[in-house]
Every structure is written in C-alpha cells, then in structure tokens.
Image 1 (cartoon, rainbow, N blue to C red):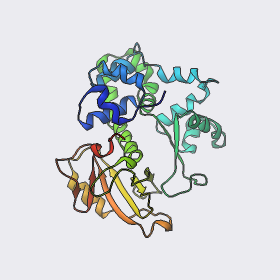
Image 2 (image 1 turned 30 degrees about the horizontal axis):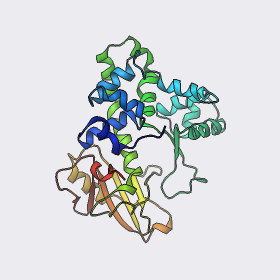
Image 3 (image 1 turned 90 degrees about the horizontal axis):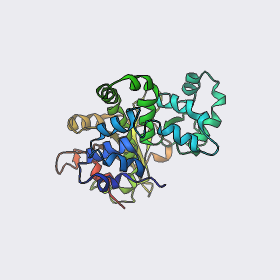
Length: 297
C-alpha cells in the first residue's frame, strides 16, 4: 500500500499545530494502518506509542519482525543489520564491526534492505552516488527507525517494566527521533515549498546532507531546478533561539562542493516546525516552517 504523505496528517487527527503533525509522522511514518490505530489515541503520540508499540501486548510490538517474515523470500537474515543501524551504526565499517563480520560481506544485505525500502544509502550532497566512498546507511521509515531504536534493544526492559517506565524509555529517545524525521522532511519536501525568499512549488530539487571529516555538517543543501541557486540550511526543532541560530548560520563557512556550484547564488535558511507570526526571515536568513513544507499538491 502506498505510504501517505505528512500533508494528510490533519485528515487523520484533525486540525492540529504543525509541531503535532511532525510528531505524529515521526511516530507512525506514512502507513495508513498505523494511522488508523493511532487515531484512537486522540492524537496523543507518546500515549499511542506506549500502548500500541512499547507494551508487549500491543498490536504493533513485533511489527517489523512480522513484515520481515512476510517478505518472499523471508528477510529475517537482514534483521541483525537493521539492529546495528538502529543502534547508531551508519558506515559500512561500523555496521560490520557491530556484527563481527568483514566489511566486504555487507554489500548484499545492505542492497536487500534498500530493495525492500527499509534502508536508504546517503552520500554527501554533490558527490556522485555510484562512486562516493563516504556512504551512510539509515533506516528509511520513521516508524521502523523508532522501533529499532526504542523497542528492539530494550525488549527485556519493556516486558518487565510498567507503563510509566516504558514512557520514560521513549522520552529518552524521542527528541532525537523527531529531529531526524524533521531533517528528512525538510530535504524531501523542498520541491513543495512556497516561500517569499525561496520561490514557488517546483523551483527546488529535493535536498541532501553534506558532511566531511571534522567540518560542520549541513542538514539541508539543495539546488534549484534552473541550476543557478544553492540553498544551505539548518534544521532546528525550536525557534526559541532563532536570532542566535540565524547569526551562527550566517557566519558558517561554505561547504566544500564541486566547482560547478561556485557560481550559484547562495541562500541560507533555518527550518523550524513553527516560528513567530509573520516571521519569514531573520536578516538575510530565510525562516522556513512546517506550514511551508507540508503543503498538499
């Protein structure tokens, strides 16, 4: 079944603030069945996760295992790789190290995960995907990412714990999971953006990340479809320190990109789920909100 986009969340749980839409999507991804189960919790995301997923009697407690078994052929042989990625290993060498296997043996299981839509391979923005040596592997779906971070490594704790202890476990990991989903959405939904500093829907290609050694990482880098503009952005969970964040972003050094981007007009942007009313920029820094990104169409 086709996954639903974040723009449909309001139809599932009503007219809620953008930050609530983001948390709902960070919990359940785009799977309609999960949305239907979660809607019974009235939009309380953490209560829904605690009851439906973290509770050993919950209907989604073993969901990824069920999905792996239903694949033809069954895909349980890649389960340890998902465990490693979910625990924070993203480079091939790190994943292999967690499993006690040579890095050369990881190509096939990682390819299978990508074929199944369970993992994605990322390379730094501007590098050729086929030849880049700096790949990272991440779990693709927000729900599955949450499950392998919170449920899989804590099975015994969840079985013996109370509802309160399960909620406390989720609380430890939840901010990072929401932040990861927000960054993904900022990159993926750039083609939908409508913003006075950035243009109309369709002006931008999907974004990517950039990292290199000890240099500061960029959360969002994108090129416009005319290949004349470059967007450099940071994704933040809150607008509380918006002016300080804008000042820091304005002073950051440019990433090291291929020469073809050297003549592009650069726009810098901060992505926050919500911002003070009518805040579209701070100085030369564009302020992009969930309302700008979660548009339908």
